[in-house]
Image 1: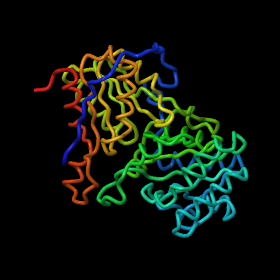
Image 2: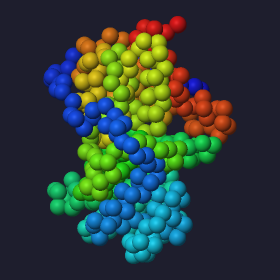
Image 3: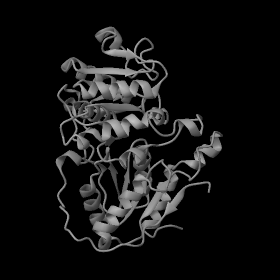
Image 4: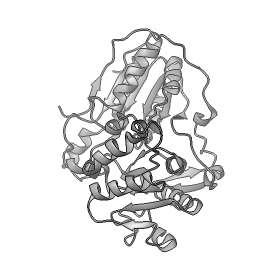
Length: 366
């Protein structure tokens, strides 16, 4: 079915356990808004890798065209010149091969940052990511750590067709042993990538190609080399009282634009940037829903078994009695991504879709 898929979660029961109402300061509203400087997501990622390589000689980068070409998206620009070919490895076009080498290096105590030109190509390496990296700590009874980061662009770009446009957030977030992060802003990118590189476990780091060139305000704190964001903590990008909008990656920007349009009509929307897909910050999500009594979830991925499906299940299980309206779920169309630009737009969530869903939840639709 073309267009945006919307499913309502209307079945569930009362939660068995209570939920903390207080939110951590780490998810307070738009902490970077006061920053006088700006930085692109591309530069944020580049600086994070550079600083972590400078601080820890065990960190190295590998992937296709990460060295001589400076990276397909210039995320690794300048690193080969600074650190040399022993720490910035150009690999052949063989995701299964270099991912396996990276996992082996992590077994030996190094800290590889493996770049995929797109996470669509990580399918070639998924056995190493899941069976070798994600499961080894458990299968070794905690004796083997696998400190490795798998990073690269995820989800739809523009006009690149079905085989280069899929979102893999739900795929990897379903796997025990993996941590899955998805930054939106420059501050997210810096803080989360630093956290991922320092983490003792495998981390899947899902970027968005269309965000690389976007500039965001960034605080002095975030520019410090010691800056790091906690894994598993969401961020409330905008406070609100009438409806909660939960999303991640590029869709955070869409949700914020929708919130502005809703405000013009007297609807106060709270926007939550997940940042971390696994672990999922259920506490922040449910605390917000208990305040607003309404939920809209947004993702670019397929609707069936998606990240938003998990969020809806969590809210139904833990905060069902607080809901004043059915959950509104927005996802990509349940089809492979079309190549034609007009159909591609129809297959992805748009700002107007979020506005309509929020108005339905508030019983304000025409």
